[in-house]
Length: 262
Image (cartoon, rainbow, N blue to C red; front, side):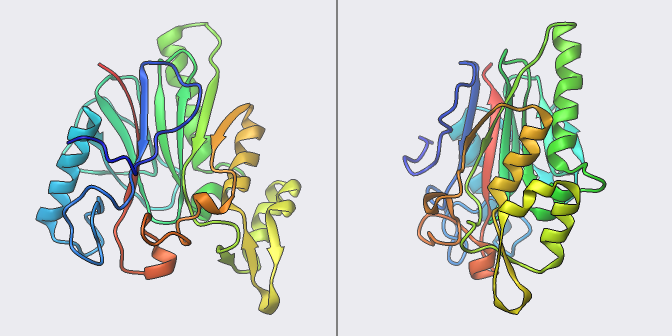
């Protein structure tokens, strides 16, 4: 399968051995409301259609996607071989060429990572719960910690720099949350107050990519690319291109995948 022109390829200064992509609705075989490139096997789509779509994804990548059973937590899986059983985690990393760390989204924020020496890649699924985590340790912090630990094994004492790419997600004009959400984030990072706008009735608008950028910057990640919160990145606002759980409830799932070339 040739990669559909509609899919997003990150524009970031990753090493030439690093490949990454974000799928859209284009390119698959599923029927409505999962049309067409649904990759989620837990949303009510016909299993045969999902498996066909996943095969098409693997063919387009030229790598083996490794899917997760995502639970809005901060668990991280090190991928060393293909597996038929999805592990319970919200992020994965690998140093093995040909294995694609893959997360599924339909409004949550996908974050892809690569070390600038091309030794380790990772993918994380970040809804607000996973981003927040516990005591300041969410999925991004957990993923970064595992990347640095693996990179040190691979590169010994050589200093490692990490870059990140933020994919499409629910935009800051569409993401309504309860009053407890800004309180949680601001308690951990006072500067997170700038990522929330009050609405009537005790609701707030939340800027998920901006919250992720704050977290990544606090970790020392200077190179952060992709989603800047503008409408072009909003999954809710573009029904012909993106799935959105907030918009439709019953819908497919897109994937963000990153891998090292063989």
